[in-house]
Image 1 (cartoon, protein in one colour):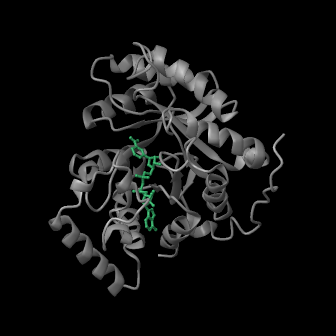
Image 2: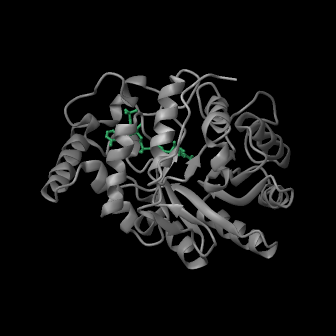
Length: 319
Ligand code: NDP
């Protein structure tokens, strides 16, 4: 048993409920307009108490939806382990107030069964995720990416069977192209496991899901849409307006490379920032508000390396 300060969730956490939650497509589920992702900042190399502080800040402010995946870390699996520790220490009494998602689809373990979209991989991966997170079930399980080699029916039937087994309550897909999304929506609906949500990258710098018709399709079919990397990994904040700060994601050089920040992009970000300021908003708040104004959006799935960042992003709820 770890001796740590006991977490008492803020009594005020649902005070803003009218503004905070949106229905996820045509489903019974309400999700917070701002959800929290565990891709970065929750791995084994991140100080556990700091991870805890971010998660507490989220829950205390009504963020009931946490988004994980099997390989978030580093190392792979460690973000789920961090969450599992928090489950034991802090969140067990609140399990039914939380909507926990995980995914499988990218590289996870060596050999032919630890990647892509086979039934073998998805089933085994979810079992591993549940063990790491100390959960009996997840609220939402995603196919993390489209697999052009595996028959879609195999992946989709695995999702159906996962729901039937009680290991996930709902299923979603992420980064599937429109045609495959249409197949998924039909296949799952025909088996009474409606597709709850699509996860894609939509932000002011990348509007592909809108341009490709994915957002329209989700809206028409009553499927929710959650936007990952809504701040373009920090570009759509004040983080890089005056150089590249030490400790920022860009200095890690893994997923956000320095060469993205061209003079043209910096100029565009500065212009956005000026527009945001003219409206009395931060760039981050303005960029999140833009997404939430688009048709068919359920939630923006932010990352945060500190509770302060998260609190700043939550100002968008007041818009
Ligand atoms: P964001 O676009 O929100 O970027 C988060 C980063 O931006 C933070 O780590 C921080 O960077 C910076 N930041 C956030 N808020 C502020 C602020 N107010 N002021 C200044 N800087 C700020 O999202 P992520 O790219 O982290 O993605 C969010 C989630 O989406 C992931 O955790 C994951 O759950 C999901 N995701 C899903 C994918 C998929 O394939 N389905 C792919 C990618 C993400 P810094 O660390 O420099 O402080």
